[in-house]
Image (cartoon, rainbow, N blue to C red; front, side, top):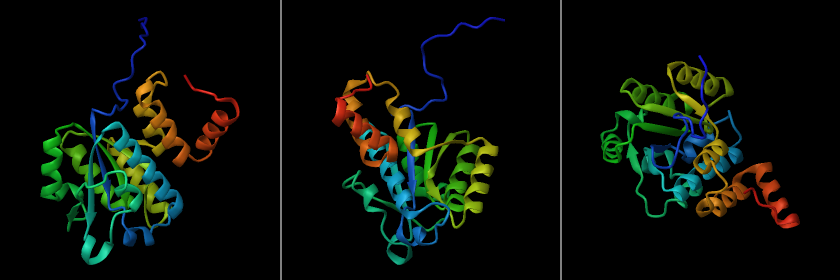
Length: 217
């Protein structure tokens, strides 16, 4: 059987309107024991995700666990991207078991859930498996998650992928939301986020623009 290709995106690709992003427990106490990823890299990747979501208008839920009594505030890099947005504080390790969070997810009403946060094996596995069980599509931004060891993070990612979650990276998330450099309304924003948080790729953008006034489109 022959197939006919068409210039259309695959159904599994994300766009800014089709999902809810959950940023979970990016807090000091959780970060202190995170060793699967360096703290600087984790904060940078979390900032990249937050700025991408805020810039593209993605429906985003920010949630903490025991903020006042134990775990501390959410990373400044995240809250700065969402000024004035309330944190949904929980007692449950599994975000999906918190009534206020679920109420907000149902208000937003989207069938795709994108997860990032600490720790991968507890506070990300819980909502990932729970959402999958209820028929949601789940994506996990692997390098905007972390755990107490590389083994803990990797096994958690394995477990979620085996259950049907789709792994991706922070930079991949940003570029998937943009997806076409001809989209000039978000071009400067996307390249600006990449320049600030995109590591070597961001340096390349800065170099090309400064030296040659280069442009992707």
